Image (tube, rainbow, N blue to C red; front, side, top):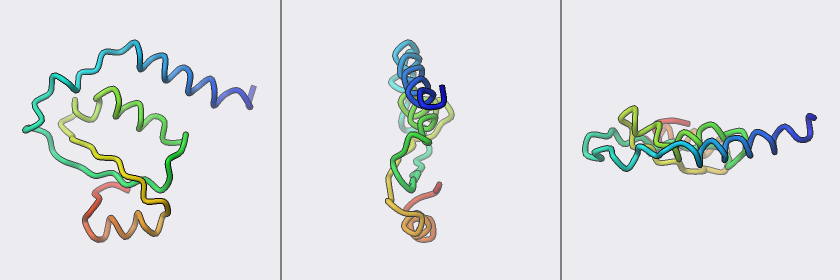
Length: 88
């Protein structure tokens, strides 16, 4: 079962994302606060973040999130210190 859990989790996430309507299209983008999120690597561990992004949950909370991949924790920290990212 342990070997199949990531596949099951990803499949369930994709199924749920296809069933839920995207509310991001209805939001007024001028009212959104821009936020840059810098991730260490593109990974399955960030799946909830990707689902939230695709489903428009960040927009529902008033955030215009841009996700970038820094390819290393040192580069994420550099992005945070230089204010080119607000979340790492």
